[in-house]
Image (cartoon, rainbow, N blue to C red; front, side, top):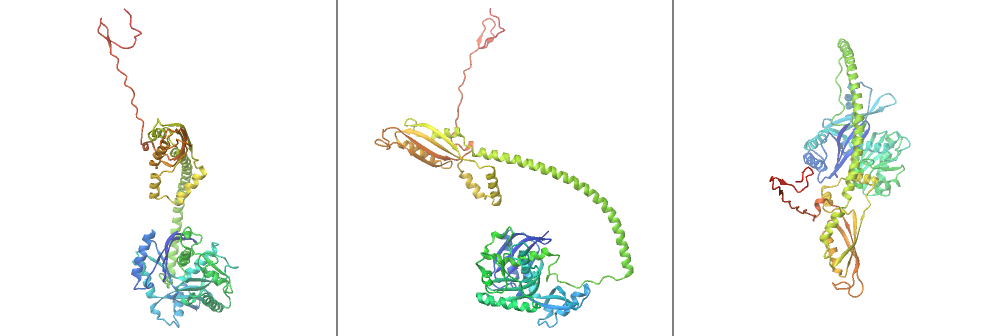
Length: 561
């Protein structure tokens, strides 16, 4: 699978899509965009724009890869060519000879590539020749060199836009026509104009620039598209386009698609070039249509094996094969001998590799079983650790309460209750883990949660006092330790004469509730330190007769005198 940086550059900015292409499938990993202020790409601006591209890739975190670059419709000339059947090596020469006829530009200043398009009724072959000015090709090379990248493909945008629309239809992101081989038109629009391209079965047949005046109003654009549809129908032998695809995104009632549908004689469908990709939803709706060229380049690379038009590697005459009969015979015999030897050697090598593959397969199965078992154990440990972190140490909390209690003579603690909040079940834990994997927690957020742990339980204290200030003092003690005690609240209390204000009124119950967050043993401020009593050593006794010390215990083997 090959990875590319597909880039489209126009008067609005740089559109970059990083992705891979292989066997008809593309995978877009990241996209990036940067506006351009000043003249478009040319030999004079190539270096500056290349440095801007380098900064954009660095800022977006995109690594270097071979570049596929779009060339705008205004930089190319298209010409239909009819030529006689020729052998492979001679075809590029014949096509060039036919293509430069009646060419108003200087042929020496133009690069040429072509794509075969079929045959005529009388047996001649047809091709679509595409010219590009050499200074435009040189500017593209300088642009990539200034960014430190290698330019591998330079393809006109109409070919890329057609491939992007065809890919959108294939993936279900755009409405299909009745027959996949129906002719269709593709529109790419911007504030400075656009491009109209007609194609059949993914093959470009006709393309034109849309002037800036055509996008100034709905009526002007409808008229311009109608005109181009009519021209294409005439050039295509009377076969009209069956649908128009517009590269844009958004609600059905917004954008050009909705406005064109009422004024054109064919169905109008929109297609989002980034629809169905993992990165598509991260790009603003208004900007997605601008990635049609970059996405189309990846689609062309996936269709392979080569881009239909590539001014970096155009079709060239091939060297004439060696026609010497004797050399061909010797070469054939040598090839047969090498194939025979290689086949025998390959058989033994392949047999050994088959055995190695079988052994590795068995090891892989054993590792899968071990990994699955370890994952189950890890899940159990995580659940146990989570339960441990959610638990509140009641004895330590009660010891902390003794330091917060204002006056044990004037206020009595009569009842304590603790309620543990409901822990998430296994399904909720899986959802939380999935959310964290999709959006990993930042270091700042993790530090904030560690500094302000979330409560996992709640205390309710019932105290009795005739002085309401005692209960208020206990609430203030919890407020002062707000890291672990949240939303302390006092209810109840004395009513009537003598209540509150420190008076000697009748004692009344107060109910103090607070949410409590778990903490590690070392985070408790007060710890109970108890020193055991010292047991005095007993003085030894002496036997008057022998002078030997006598212990403080009775010796069962000692004889009484």
